[in-house]
Amino acid sequence: MPPVPTTFYHPRYEDYFFGPQHPFRPSRQHMLLDLLEALARAPDPEEPAPAERADVLAVHDADFVEAVETASQRNGPAPGRRYGLGRGGDTPAFSGMDAATRRLAGGTLAASRRVADGEATVALQLGGGLHHAHAGRASGFCVYDDLAVAIHHLLRNDLRVAYLDIDVHHGDGVQSIFYRDPRVLTVSLHESGRFLFPGTGFPSERGEGPGEGTAVNVPLAPHTTGERYLDAFEAVAAPAVAAFAPDVIVAQCGADAHMKDPLAHLALTTHAYESLFRNIKALADKHAGGRLVATHGGGYDLDAAARVWALALFIFTGQSLPEEPLPETWRERWRGRHGTAPAATLHDETTPDVPASEREEIEAHNRRAVEAVRERLQGRGLADE
Ligand SMILES: [Zn+2]
Image (tube, rainbow, N blue to C red; front, side, top):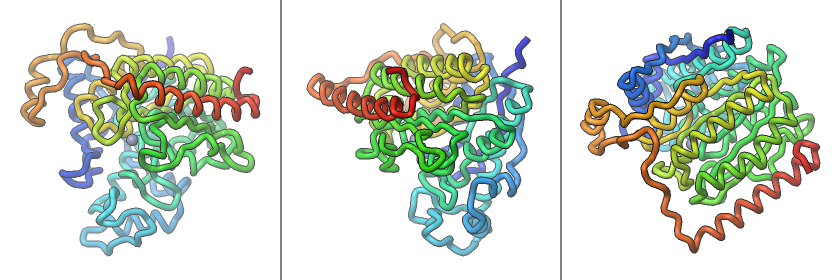
């Protein structure tokens, strides 16, 4: 019998909190866990220990870690702006930040340990996905890079890692940390950096030195629908992973490419996410012995994020999808908290409204992007002719 899938979550994930007005809210995970409970599908997650300082130092610069520690003290001095933690920025320092971000990194690290030890083939971190954190600076709501900490652990166990990033934003932090490492393939599909933070993630970014060819980026046009997104995934991610032949897949499953997300402009539905999760699972099964570590990530429409992450959990752990409407008690409870009721069904009942006049331009943009990536993949023997 294959080892059972494992999930990781800790109530203290909510300590990672930039304040009530900040979009990166712990209630995103509360709403998901409450939904799973209401559906009688509560996953009974294990509670991970925080990552150790040494785990963090394996991928982050010592002066940056010291800056985070100092900035974490109550009434501590303001960190230098070069560390990305300025009070006016999008990742402002807060009291207890070092411990809180190590706690999140600990969940992703625990998931990777479980898979590296062979005790699980699939391990899910119900949080984390802080893919913008760089070796030497915080960025985009991300302090320590839990994904890089986990990938580093897999590398130490001689496992080759294919990292798939489906967050709507480019996975720039993870890419930069492993840019010269031939043992890590990073693949990111995202809204083009011409239109969206962090402004990077173009086909010309392909890795460097011994890692040349192991960074793959697909910048998509605003308003790209799920169908076209899935075409791009099929044309680029699937052949790149197949050719790389990883031992394990690490997936950052941001929910902010959903059409309702307030911070970005792609137009995926939950149906598209379902296909995407099935494709990722199939890639793991076919090319990585089923080994898959998955995290959450961005996702700022709370209702959409809860439903997207419920789908990820059901599909990655091999469960059937609930057919019935979502429980009224759950909808009422969250209507009370947010003022608007969540959707009545797990899947969206509407489709994105993309004007016909824009469709041609979107498709032309995406075709060019996919062709540019595929040319480079073929140059490296990473795609079929
Ligand atoms: Zn994002």
